[in-house]
Image 1 (cartoon, one colour):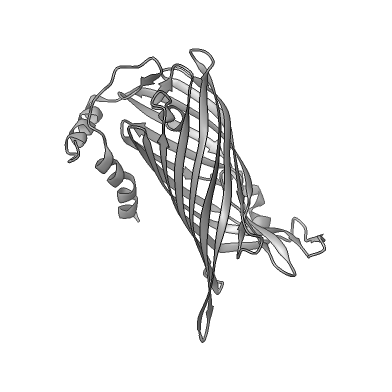
Image 2 (cartoon, rainbow, N blue to C red; image 1 turned 120 degrees about the horizontal axis):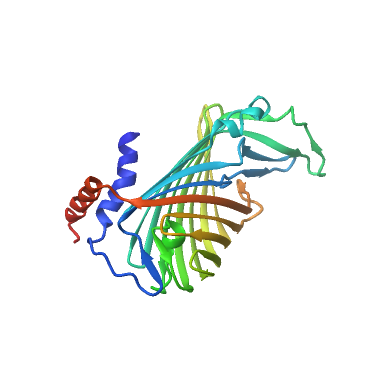
Length: 333
């Protein structure tokens, strides 16, 4: 596991780390290359999914709605670790069970390209909103069905390209730059994901591979020297490949389906920025349309609210020298 995490975090950034050149601050963007950036955030970015059968329907969801994360950024190094503290769910564990959340993410930039990689694991779900075909809802808060052994493991990658060099995606994603003058850009992205859902007490496993291509526009409005607002909209289209495997004594039975999906991503936000301290809040909306006859339907409309706060400070000399040496080893320089 530790070896996997090391490769996940450092291999891409070592391979794609840019040559150590510090550009002058432009009229539009102020670079913060010589500062370490620490960021703490809270959000509700946790997926649930629903089952709609001929005789029954229900929602499967984790026993937590809040996730925390801590991010570290310095030059080309960027990674984020997310988890859900126990105190957010402790009072409801008796009726909904325990949920453990772990997420690690890294991203890196090459000129106007951005590449993100994410690994996420959630263990422990419960079933709610059980109803029959006539819409009759039954069960009570003390009768949730717990699924303590249900695991979801996902790998997600996203490649983005920004067409306007005066628009800083780093200022919005990593806060390692500051947008000093209002600018917007057309942004294209390709998202590819793999999801594995399994329960060691169940005879069924589900695997989903997805590809979604988006193209849209985002604008950063610099309100004053310290305040900014963002707005963006990006429609897309993609495909998902699902495989459901059922284990029998006589062998495995596999069911496959392929779905064409539509996707719309939107974002609005407001933030505060100084050279050392920054904070912000944003709301992201994700709507994904899927076939009603799919094996499983993930929540098709999601609203993700995020609050973040961060601090930038000068890197210690020994740390700066170490990163200088690491960048000098890059064979692409």
